[in-house]
Image 1 (cartoon, rainbow, N blue to C red):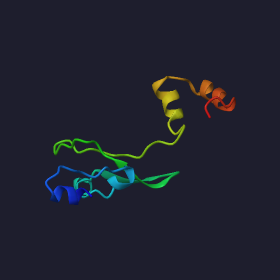
Image 2: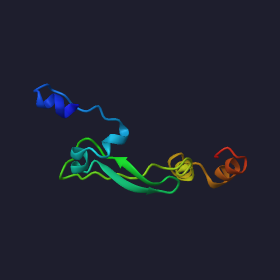
Image 3: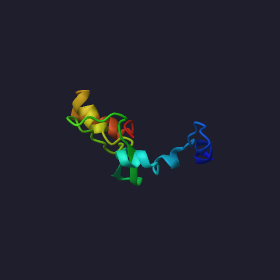
Image 4: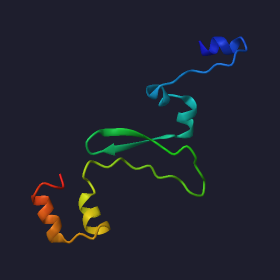
Length: 95
């Protein structure tokens, strides 16, 4: 339909959904999606940023799993001591 209308000089474009975007020629050419291995979901296409800069290439990583960084956040960022963390973990509060 889009090509038919465009052939008659009517401005028209396809209305894509998420499934179509991965096959859009311009998006594929731009390398917008990066395929990453996820420990639970397997191979996943992650969308990159809409802007790219040659001097600052983007790094697209996988999404974290639920609770993957709990220990790191509690002990590092929050400054929780090992004993408190162990107590909360044993109580099931960190699941």
